[in-house]
Image (cartoon, rainbow, N blue to C red; front, side):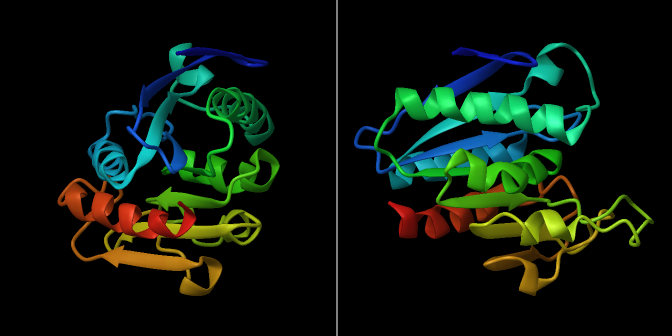
Length: 196
């Protein structure tokens, strides 16, 4: 499904649950795709749990850019995407999420999008080697419960448990969360059950 936004077209790959109890909207990191192993695992487990899942390629990636641009522009496009998906699936509770930069977008826009909760995979707490440039305010400011899943070897850091409703730190995982994506999918699916 192509979705028009103020920042160009976005694309949503949608997998519908037979009797959906929730709409889960996910997106990628800055240079990634919606086919990242953790996103695919989350899709599979959320579908099995009864969620319709939309994996969104944001306008900047469709345009071929590797950098997302300003947060304001990215958030404006994201809110248009989510509004279109909510119109297509009215009445379903919304949970939105993403990995890395996509996790930041999901947290920053959760309240404006009307999300019941957010999922942050590999939340990039700070640029590598720059802990003084913390992005913890984006987690704290989500306005909804946030599930954070990070690896303990993530060079972007690991958020403080106090800044999320739930923090899961996976031993031996880096920023890509690809060693055991099944655990990521299972963790998210268990957490989503409270919103269905």
